[in-house]
Image 1 (tube, rainbow, N blue to C red):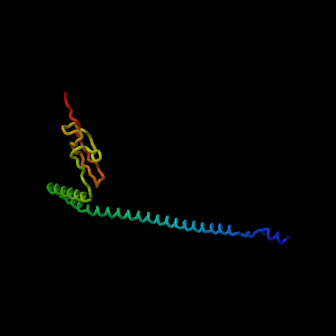
Image 2: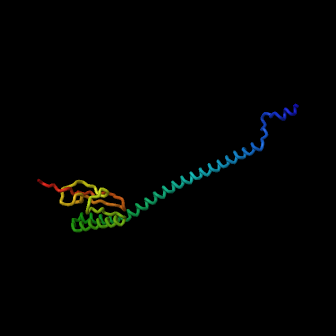
Image 3: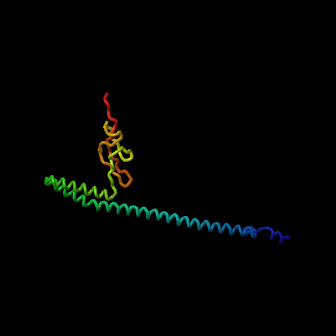
Length: 177
C-alpha cells in the first residue's frame, strides 16, 4: 500500500509524466514559437531593407537635383558672359553695342528656356481663367471676354502654368443714351 501511495502521488519538484496528448501540444507550442521567431526576424530584416532603400532613394534624388541644377547653370554661363559684354559696352557709352548686347542676351536666354520646355502663354482670343489673370476689364468694341491688352506675359513649363498672363479683358461697350 505504501508503494502504491508513492507511485500515485507526485514527488514535489519533479515533472509529472506527460501523455501523448500533452506531448503533441508542447511540440506545437515550440513549432509556433519557432515560426514566430522566424517571422519576427524576417520583419526586422524587411524593415532594415526598407530603411536602407528610403535613405538610398533620398541620396539619389539629391544627386539628381544637383546634376540638373549643374546642367542649367552651365548653360547659363554664356548668357552671363554676354551680359557682361553688354555692361562693358554701356560703360564705354556705345549705345548701339549696348542695345545689340542686350538683344543678344535676351535671345540667348529665351532660346535656352524654350529648349528647356518653357513656352509663352497665348493671349490672342478669349480670356481663359486657367492661364490668364484679368487685371481689369475695359469697355471695348471687341467681343466681351476677349483679351485686348497684355500687361505681363505668362509662361508654361510643359502643361504647368508657371506664371499666368496678366491681361486686360474686353467689357461690353458703354452706350450713351
